[in-house]
Length: 143
Picture 1 (cartoon, rainbow, N blue to C red):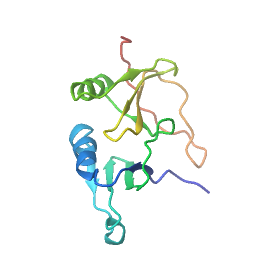
Picture 2: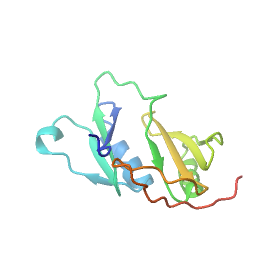
Picture 3: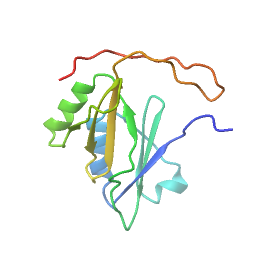
Picture 4: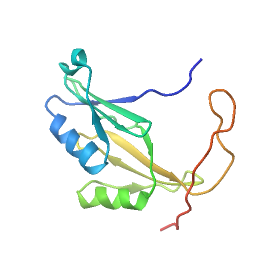
């Protein structure tokens, strides 16, 4: 039985670790998690924020993920958008998902990222054992 998602992995080009650290830790505020020594030799880096785990693995034939992407739930979505835009990142708002504010952006190596924040209280999603999960939502004014 599946119980949770352990992590999401994105690819990155060789030698991009410092750029990724500056973005994921410096801009997004994630914490770098040390890779096990046997895996550290492969390059790349791992990050965490709360229960979110994001691994960036080096791919010699790197191609950024343009369609597939992690959806990162945030609080204070406007602040995230402003922080990314101030650093030159493209921020593309999308209002097509009911009950959420969201935008798309890219990390420094071109991987697509979705940032979203619930705006309404709706039915609680179910956990793996079928019970209702708690949902924290914050209402925001639409731009």
